[in-house]
Every structure is written in C-alpha cells, then in structure tokens.
Amino acid sequence: MSNQLPGLLPLDGITVVSFEQAVAAPIATRHLADLGARVIKVERIGEGDFARNYDSAVHGIASHFVWLNRGKESVTVDLKAAEGVSVIRKLVGRADVVVQNLAPGAMDRLGLGAEVLRRDRPELIVVNMTGYGTDGPLKDRKAYDMLVQAETGLCSITGTPETATKTGVPASDIAAGMYALTAVQAALFRRERTGVGAVVNVSMFDATIEWLGHPMYLQMYQDTQVQRMGLSHASISPYDAYPTIDGRILIGVQNDRGWRALVTDVFDRPDLAEHPKFATNILRVRHRAETDAVVAEHTRRFDTGELDKRLAAAGVPAARLNDMRDLIDHPQLSERDRWRRIDTESGQVRAVLPPMTFTDVELPMGPVPALGQHTDAVLAELGLTDAAIAGLRTGGTVG
Image 1 (spheres, rainbow, N blue to C red):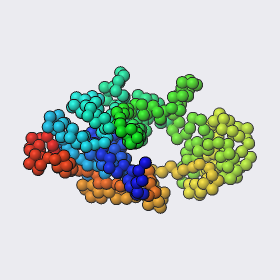
Image 2: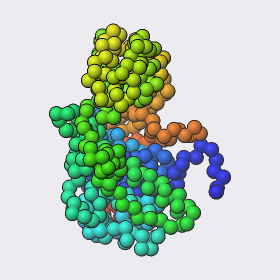
Image 3: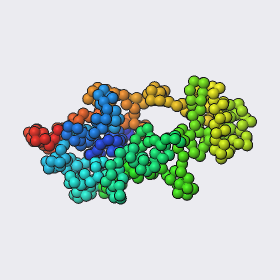
Image 4: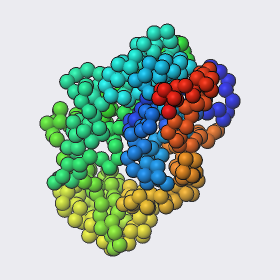
C-alpha cells in the first residue's frame, strides 16, 4: 500500500473516456470527476449529448446537463469516420476506464467494443451500460427511464391508490449510474492488486430490480402486491402527512416506543399508548384509518413549526413537506456551507458539494464544458499538429 499524502484526491491520475448521453452514464462519470479523475466526454459534432437540448433553464444551458457534466472535458468527433475512430483509439490507449451507454451494439459496430479495446490492454476497465442487458428478449428495446420504471414494476408501487406514477427523479437512470460508479471503483481497486482490468455490464433494468427487493420478496413469498399509498407505508402506521394549523407535516413512527413518545410527549395523551386498537404497529396497521384520524385530530392543534420542534424533542421521526424553494433555502445546506459556485460557458452557477465528504480534501467541482471545448487540446496531447487538427476539422472528422 502506498503512503499517499493526506489531501490527495481519491482518483487523482485516473483517466476516464466516456461515450455517454442523457443521465445514467453521465451521473457515474460526473462522480468520478468529483473524486478527482480526468473525464473526457466524447460527443457528437454539432449536437453533442442530447441532454444539452432538454431545456435552457440555467442561463441558456440545460439543467440536466449542468447537473451531470461538471468537471469534464468535451471532445467532438465523428465516430462514423475512419479517421475519427483512429483518433478515439489513440485516446482510449491512454485511458484507465471507458464508460459507454450508447445504443445497444453501437460500440461494437464502430470497432470500439470492449474486446477490441482490451485486446492489447488487458488492464483497461470497460463499463457497458444498457437498458435491459446484453441479451434476452428486450436487449434491443429503447430504454428510457420511464419505460424501465414501468417494465420493472416500480410504477406499480409508486403513486396513489388511484394512479400509478413514475418517480419524480429518473430513478432507473440514477440507480444504474450508481452501480456503474461502484463497479469502476471496485475494478480499479482489483487492478491495483492484480494488474488486470475488467469488462462490466450494468443495466437500468437490473439496477432498478435491485432496488425492488422488498416488494419483490413480498410478492414471491406472501403473494402480496405492495399497494400504492402516496406518502403512506404499507407496513407501518402512523406513517403519512398530517394536517397542521398552517400546512402539513410528515410523521413516520417506526416502532411502539415511537408511538408511546408521540401520544405521551407530543400529544399529552398517555391513554392512547396502550389503547387496544393502537398499542402495537400490527394493530395500528389493522386500524390504519382510525390511527390516522386520531393523529390528525391532534396535529391540527399545532402550527407546523411548533409541532416540528415538539416531535424532534420527543425523538419522533418527522419532516416538513418541503418544495424545491424550501430545499434551496434549507438551513441544513447553508449552515453546513454546502453551496459552491461553478463555471459554465454562460457564467457561474450555484451547485451543491458532492454527497461524499472527505475530511482531508474538498472534492473538486470543475466547469461545465461547452460542446467540443477541449477537442484541440486533447488532440494535441495525442501528438497531432495544429495542421493535422485543422485538416480533421475541415474534413468534418472533429468539431
């Protein structure tokens, strides 16, 4: 084990080349960049990652793109041109990791599949991200986040009793991205010990199913479909949003001790602690409507701020039902100094520090790249002269 100095970024010296679009791969590589890796994003000339065009909310730049692509370098190359593929092979020849979530089979058709890339470089780590996996009846299907949420059954347990919904953020994309991130780090650690790289396949379908373990096991072994319950919980009561004088507050009692604390210390109703309908969670779930009615009767006596303080003092799990404006102004962010400013082609924008906090070094939050911003610099690193780069640009091979 090397004696590295404190303050060194965890992935300093690691180079990642990514052929990516949308959310799943970009969120994985953005976190790799946060951890100190150099991430070179290969994009289509003229259009780039199609997430660049989802909206123009952040000073003219798409909100998804700002979120997912800071700290990367953008290189624009025509991968359908032989000269473009030749340039990319040189680039990958200097990389530690390749991540891609292009259409199924696209990398192989370009001559950039894992087997080809690792033929002379067994130490290379290649992560292929797909919608449904590399085989099976759905392997060639389009796999946007909503479609995978529906296909896996995630939508069947999300929403209200009346309406199935997808999650408010792209859960299947993010799940796949987090498993790709984990896979890269694990493969790098293994390579340190063995010198051998890896080929890893991560699918949105499999990643989402991993998150569905609880409802899946209930169905397999109890023949029970988890019901859609909005903010409530199929197995716990009280667990929902309850009315206050000026709004609502979420209360989630996890056990019978919590119930006793709620009714005794918060509501001043110790008689409810051992009530024959409410004394245990099993009883409260069985009498859910009555439990919710009793809780709501008492929460209505307080304004939200006062009740929030009483619940916290009693150790009863609770939270305010915030919106995005509340989140932006949340004291848990401001008082912990979690906000920073990052550069974009349209000026600086606010961003929150990465969720993994190292005590000896602050993770970097690099600029969001303009399309093709780093093409010339990266090509020059590969040994191409200014004249050669100009020739590739004139021929439409690079942007």
